[in-house]
Length: 358
Image (cartoon, rainbow, N blue to C red; front, side, top):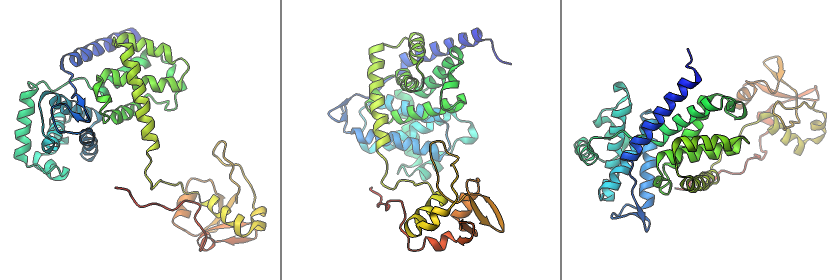
């Protein structure tokens, strides 16, 4: 049974108020100066690598997204409270993840300290991790839970759906859960940026959401002002954070690895070869519009497979051709050409893969 809109809005308002109060009381971030955390030898790159490593471990041990976000918050709060040495950074990070898992995860999902130390490759003994655990709890006064950027994404997302129920109709991920997942992933990427770690979780979450709403809907400003008013965030601080989020996420989009992934299209590959080596046969092939909007595929509309004829755009066609399971292209309805034989000696349309840059 769904709650009335007014009751749901009141519950979300109380939830946001409590989250903002905890953030205001507990939030801390390390200060970066001259490329290092002030008062320590921990560099910007070492800090960012530690956060990314926490993300990898969270995936490895199948922890929830809230656990990763809380681990980063615990890490930053400790680094803002003590002068840590770089050699202890991984020990602090893995211990922060263990404490976050104990706070958020079910008991059966938590790995033992011994197994976690071995599987994570942190080069710390269980005794060192337990000793670091006591240090963190002491420095943070046993008060670990703070509303994280991921928590604020969930709250703001629920508020947007409650106040603007028409919004899911204009966004690509029409399922609300998918949209929340997408925003969460973006916030997690931003948490690895040392510049964005200087903003509170509420500001970072709202900046990320606003940036996406601005791109998706012309009605974004009314949604933005509504959330800004409820969250009581300084507008100039939010605008500055939003600009940095935009720059950081844009830089991630263009930092593609050299070994890019290419989509296998058996029909286009065969037709490309025929166009080069047998243009007369290629001209005789029957054309049919592609199932993808805005993309026309010139090629055989039928393939012979195990005595049957099926359309080349059938779902399993690509899989069978990928594994060379008896497929043949029907050219002009007379001769069949086996793609495996046709493509011998041909040049791949994909650029050559480059060696991995470490």
